[in-house]
Length: 378
Image 1: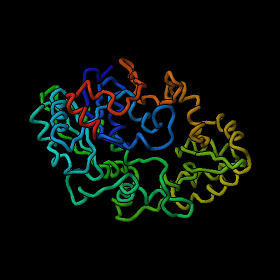
Image 2 (image 1 turned 180 degrees about the horizontal axis):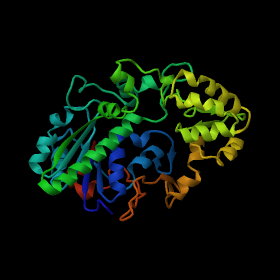
Image 3 (image 1 turned 60 degrees about the vertical axis):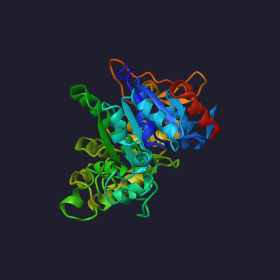
Image 4 (image 1 turned 90 degrees about the vertical axis):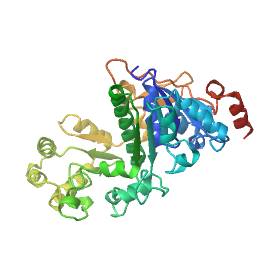
């Protein structure tokens, strides 16, 4: 596998950091998850449990080793620094300043191992006026302006279904780590990577920032191309109280659908771009889709060259034929469901290890016995 021989120290919890290191583990890296004595990663206790672990924790931490260290004690910190000497990557998600106070910040670690790639993930990055401010995904989405573009039918901000800031930060961190490892092959030196969730969210807004940048005004979400202003990029209720999502606004898709529905006269309104002029098309499609069930529309639309999908529940999504064919839904030996690795290489593909380590299971293999004993007592 691509990352065989790479050792990663994972001092992260919840979602952004574990999402980053999961990708490394799936592609062969040895990921050593360093957890606090007692409860360990909070993800071990979030959501429903299936087997010995929660689904949340299993999804994000399969294939990783678990070492328990008390980083508040000198012995635990020294054990971690000793591990750093043989590590290639160090990922942490503590609030800025914590690692410095503990003596395991980048400068301290680099003294032990100048080749190490050290990635810090936090809500607002290591510098700036918000650096010490705590926040989780939804607060970052709010500050980045994304939540203000995620509106319900009442024109009020709606709770997002997926923690986009967490995931984007994890992906940006993964990109940074891999770039730094590539650069290390040339220079022999590691690097420090400062990932802010807020930064990642702003970088994810490039397609919706036009009015804000060009005119200094807040875009009207319901008039914008991908947030409701396009009749062929919207969600429509069907007769059985399910939904059809239209997702393609290019002229060929507009013409294919409206010609099929007997209203080619409405094409011109769509081809003028998103905005209020498409309201007659939206009203027509609202009434039209309400006349048949989702399955009936699925059968009709499948024959046309249009972008669409039937809105599925999560259990339905896990049974989707394309997801199954692509290996995105996998089962382990105990029958537990896993989401497969989305990065697909022709050579050296991912081989996820479905085992989930018990808290501290690998402590004895990686740290001195005295440190293990102290952590067990704690």
